[in-house]
Length: 120
Image (cartoon, rainbow, N blue to C red):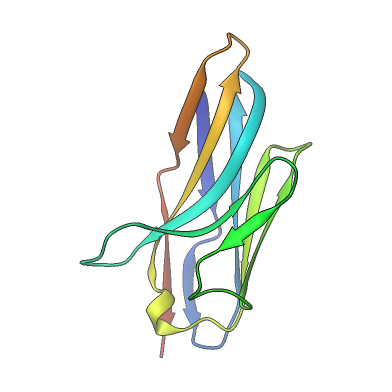
């Protein structure tokens, strides 16, 4: 079993910054990718940023240059630094990870989501 817990959501003014964190815990042998998705009201969930175990990253075009994803493999934690926030960044942000458990199971896991609201 692997769990993801997100922290750092809340209200921020447009142009401001916020940092999200997601910690993985449980019977983890290794974590492959860690990623952030978001879902705005009335819209489909979309990939925001992904980081692989080796450190390579990819971003949605809408956040390139503003958001930075990073990970601390010693803590099984992924971060999303969000700068120059816009009202259209308002969404529930979900952490996602692919992990192999100690028992050898491959799991794709989602966090419960954390709401980020950007006021204009």
